[in-house]
Amino acid sequence: MMDCLYAKCIPYITDCVLAELEKLGQKYRVALRIIKDPRFERITCMHKGTYADDCLVQRVTQHKCYIVATNDKDLKRRIRKIPGVPIMYVSQHRYTIERMPDAYGAPKT
Image (cartoon, rainbow, N blue to C red):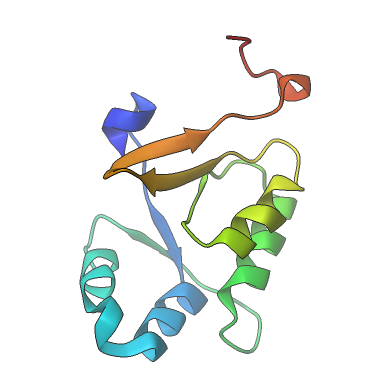
């Protein structure tokens, strides 16, 4: 992730994302082991339930200081509607940042 951003970054995981991964079971055990790493910061959620998408959309709408990392197509579609929030995802075995629209100060290529 740091190689993609060319900067030091701190990955954050919300409680509901952790709970959702635990519910998904054995198929996602590697992801669960990765996010339990002590270098990942935990964010406590104040809402009820464990639907992570709503929590993440609400959090980045309030605080536009996050880069959302996901491969979930529905979540990416929802995050794209929020101006100024970049999306990171894995494509062809490497991290990729989705370019922000020109209107929000992204450099023109």
